[in-house]
Length: 170
Image (cartoon, rainbow, N blue to C red):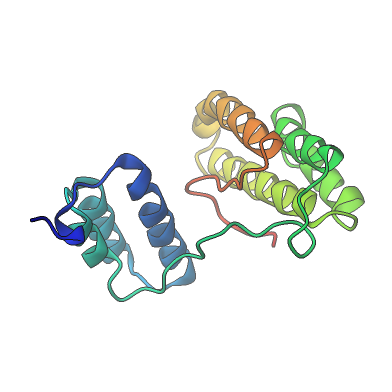
Protein backbone atom coordinates (compact mmCIF):
# COMPACT_ATOMS: atom_id res chain seq x y z
CA UNK A 1 0.00 0.00 0.00
CA UNK A 2 1.45 3.37 -1.07
CA UNK A 3 1.30 6.41 1.14
CA UNK A 4 0.88 9.88 -0.35
CA UNK A 5 4.62 10.53 0.06
CA UNK A 6 5.42 7.50 -2.12
CA UNK A 7 3.34 8.68 -5.10
CA UNK A 8 5.23 9.78 -8.21
CA UNK A 9 5.50 13.51 -8.95
CA UNK A 10 4.27 15.06 -12.19
CA UNK A 11 5.79 18.07 -13.95
CA UNK A 12 2.66 20.05 -13.07
CA UNK A 13 3.36 19.39 -9.37
CA UNK A 14 6.95 20.61 -9.76
CA UNK A 15 5.98 24.05 -11.12
CA UNK A 16 4.55 25.53 -7.88
CA UNK A 17 7.54 24.17 -5.93
CA UNK A 18 9.98 25.78 -8.35
CA UNK A 19 7.99 29.03 -8.21
CA UNK A 20 8.11 28.97 -4.39
CA UNK A 21 11.89 28.40 -4.44
CA UNK A 22 12.35 31.34 -6.82
CA UNK A 23 10.20 33.50 -4.58
CA UNK A 24 12.13 32.45 -1.45
CA UNK A 25 15.43 33.24 -3.20
CA UNK A 26 14.12 36.67 -4.27
CA UNK A 27 12.98 37.32 -0.67
CA UNK A 28 16.47 36.45 0.63
CA UNK A 29 15.33 33.32 2.48
CA UNK A 30 17.77 31.16 0.48
CA UNK A 31 21.35 31.92 -0.52
CA UNK A 32 22.54 31.14 -4.05
CA UNK A 33 24.09 27.76 -3.19
CA UNK A 34 21.05 26.52 -1.29
CA UNK A 35 18.74 27.78 -4.05
CA UNK A 36 20.73 25.85 -6.69
CA UNK A 37 20.74 22.70 -4.57
CA UNK A 38 16.98 22.85 -3.88
CA UNK A 39 16.20 23.57 -7.54
CA UNK A 40 18.20 20.49 -8.50
CA UNK A 41 16.38 18.41 -5.89
CA UNK A 42 13.00 19.70 -7.08
CA UNK A 43 13.80 18.91 -10.71
CA UNK A 44 15.02 15.38 -9.91
CA UNK A 45 12.49 14.43 -7.20
CA UNK A 46 10.60 11.29 -8.07
CA UNK A 47 8.06 11.15 -5.22
CA UNK A 48 5.88 13.63 -3.34
CA UNK A 49 7.85 12.92 -0.18
CA UNK A 50 11.10 13.97 -1.87
CA UNK A 51 9.38 17.08 -3.22
CA UNK A 52 7.99 18.01 0.20
CA UNK A 53 11.49 17.83 1.69
CA UNK A 54 12.60 20.62 -0.68
CA UNK A 55 10.12 23.07 0.90
CA UNK A 56 10.06 21.71 4.45
CA UNK A 57 11.21 24.97 6.10
CA UNK A 58 9.52 27.48 3.75
CA UNK A 59 6.00 28.88 3.92
CA UNK A 60 3.68 27.32 1.32
CA UNK A 61 2.42 29.28 -1.70
CA UNK A 62 -1.15 30.54 -1.62
CA UNK A 63 -3.43 27.88 -3.08
CA UNK A 64 -5.63 30.23 -5.15
CA UNK A 65 -4.55 33.04 -7.44
CA UNK A 66 -5.62 36.51 -6.33
CA UNK A 67 -8.62 37.72 -8.29
CA UNK A 68 -9.22 41.33 -9.32
CA UNK A 69 -11.10 43.55 -6.87
CA UNK A 70 -11.93 41.26 -3.97
CA UNK A 71 -12.92 38.09 -5.77
CA UNK A 72 -14.51 39.64 -8.85
CA UNK A 73 -13.49 38.02 -12.11
CA UNK A 74 -11.77 40.39 -14.52
CA UNK A 75 -13.90 41.70 -17.36
CA UNK A 76 -13.15 40.98 -20.99
CA UNK A 77 -11.74 44.49 -21.30
CA UNK A 78 -9.42 43.87 -18.33
CA UNK A 79 -8.16 40.65 -19.89
CA UNK A 80 -7.57 42.39 -23.25
CA UNK A 81 -5.66 45.27 -21.61
CA UNK A 82 -3.58 42.82 -19.57
CA UNK A 83 -2.73 40.87 -22.72
CA UNK A 84 -1.90 44.14 -24.50
CA UNK A 85 0.49 45.03 -21.67
CA UNK A 86 2.50 41.87 -22.35
CA UNK A 87 2.32 42.24 -26.14
CA UNK A 88 3.33 45.91 -26.07
CA UNK A 89 6.60 44.89 -24.45
CA UNK A 90 7.81 43.57 -27.81
CA UNK A 91 7.83 46.83 -29.81
CA UNK A 92 8.10 49.36 -26.94
CA UNK A 93 10.21 47.52 -24.33
CA UNK A 94 8.93 48.69 -20.93
CA UNK A 95 7.23 51.93 -22.07
CA UNK A 96 3.99 50.38 -23.40
CA UNK A 97 3.34 48.20 -20.35
CA UNK A 98 4.27 51.12 -18.06
CA UNK A 99 1.78 53.39 -19.81
CA UNK A 100 -0.99 50.78 -19.47
CA UNK A 101 -0.09 50.26 -15.81
CA UNK A 102 -0.38 53.98 -15.10
CA UNK A 103 -3.53 54.60 -17.15
CA UNK A 104 -5.57 51.42 -16.60
CA UNK A 105 -3.97 50.06 -13.44
CA UNK A 106 -5.92 52.44 -11.23
CA UNK A 107 -9.21 51.06 -12.54
CA UNK A 108 -8.29 47.36 -12.52
CA UNK A 109 -5.93 45.51 -10.19
CA UNK A 110 -5.84 42.67 -12.74
CA UNK A 111 -4.47 44.95 -15.46
CA UNK A 112 -2.04 46.53 -12.99
CA UNK A 113 -0.62 43.14 -11.89
CA UNK A 114 -0.07 41.99 -15.47
CA UNK A 115 1.35 45.34 -16.62
CA UNK A 116 3.73 45.45 -13.62
CA UNK A 117 4.96 41.94 -14.45
CA UNK A 118 5.53 42.96 -18.08
CA UNK A 119 7.40 46.12 -17.00
CA UNK A 120 9.61 44.12 -14.63
CA UNK A 121 10.39 41.55 -17.31
CA UNK A 122 11.29 44.15 -19.93
CA UNK A 123 13.45 46.12 -17.45
CA UNK A 124 15.30 42.93 -16.50
CA UNK A 125 16.02 42.10 -20.15
CA UNK A 126 17.12 45.69 -20.82
CA UNK A 127 19.54 45.55 -17.87
CA UNK A 128 21.00 42.27 -19.15
CA UNK A 129 21.56 43.81 -22.59
CA UNK A 130 23.22 46.90 -21.12
CA UNK A 131 25.40 44.97 -18.66
CA UNK A 132 26.51 42.52 -21.37
CA UNK A 133 27.43 45.36 -23.74
CA UNK A 134 24.79 44.28 -26.26
CA UNK A 135 25.55 40.56 -26.31
CA UNK A 136 22.36 39.91 -24.33
CA UNK A 137 20.28 41.36 -27.17
CA UNK A 138 20.03 37.78 -28.44
CA UNK A 139 17.50 37.34 -25.61
CA UNK A 140 15.00 39.58 -27.38
CA UNK A 141 13.99 36.76 -29.72
CA UNK A 142 13.10 34.70 -26.67
CA UNK A 143 11.24 37.59 -25.05
CA UNK A 144 8.88 37.77 -28.04
CA UNK A 145 7.84 34.19 -27.38
CA UNK A 146 7.54 34.74 -23.62
CA UNK A 147 5.44 37.89 -24.16
CA UNK A 148 3.12 36.02 -26.52
CA UNK A 149 2.62 33.20 -24.02
CA UNK A 150 2.01 35.71 -21.20
CA UNK A 151 -0.56 37.55 -23.33
CA UNK A 152 -2.46 34.31 -23.92
CA UNK A 153 -2.36 33.56 -20.18
CA UNK A 154 -3.72 37.04 -19.42
CA UNK A 155 -6.58 36.50 -21.87
CA UNK A 156 -7.37 33.19 -20.17
CA UNK A 157 -7.49 34.83 -16.69
CA UNK A 158 -4.36 33.00 -15.55
CA UNK A 159 -1.58 34.52 -13.43
CA UNK A 160 1.77 35.19 -15.12
CA UNK A 161 5.22 35.24 -13.53
CA UNK A 162 8.18 35.49 -15.86
CA UNK A 163 11.12 33.40 -14.61
CA UNK A 164 14.43 35.01 -13.58
CA UNK A 165 12.88 38.48 -13.41
CA UNK A 166 13.82 41.27 -11.03
CA UNK A 167 10.62 42.57 -9.47
CA UNK A 168 11.42 46.30 -9.32
CA UNK A 169 7.82 47.53 -9.79
CA UNK A 170 5.15 46.24 -7.46
